[in-house]
Amino acid sequence: MTAPEPADFETAVCTMLRAESVDPSYLAFVRRHLHEPDATWRWCCGSNCDPCVERLGRVVDRARMLLDPPATPQ
Picture 1: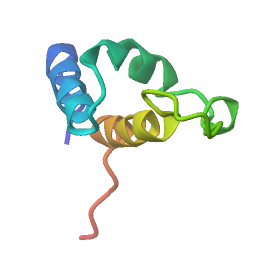
Picture 2 (picture 1 turned 135 degrees about the vertical axis):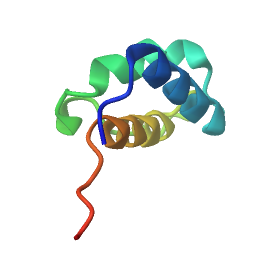
Picture 3 (picture 1 turned 180 degrees about the horizontal axis):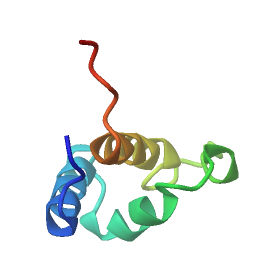
């Protein structure tokens, strides 16, 4: 599987964001955190932030898989 085209990737991530009830304007957050170590940004403070980093993290995880899907056993 090849990496999606940039426009296709953005469309897919916006769909993922909506599925998590997160505004698509957070696309930049997802893009910025795709290659950042999780330990530098991925912790919930428990203050009921909207959106919570846990929801954003799920989108980042799915976007990472879109860019680099796990190998399928042969």
